Image (cartoon, rainbow, N blue to C red; front, side, top):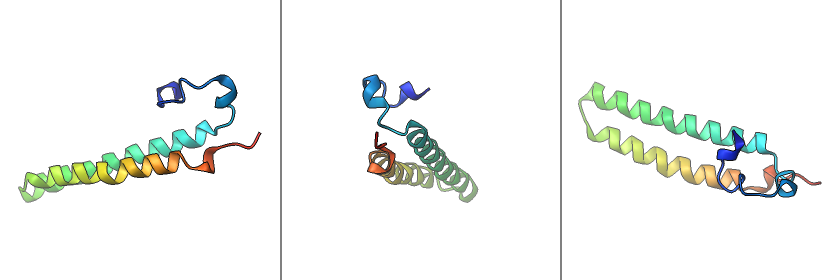
Length: 83
C-alpha cells in the first residue's frame, strides 16, 4: 500500500526506482507506532492519575516529536538509491 505515501503515488515509475520504498515505509510504520504508544501512555496516565489535561499534553507532544522526525528521516538521502 505504498501508494498511500504522499508524493510517492504521483512519481513516475523511473523516479520510484530511485527510492528504497521499503525503508521509507518502515520509518513511517515505526513513527506511527511510536506516536500511538506515547498517546496511549498519556491516556493511561490521564485516567490513572485523574488528570484529564495529561491526555492532551501527550497527544500534542507525540505530534510535535513524531511529525518532524518522520519528515526529516524519510526525506534524508538514506533512502535514495544510486542507480
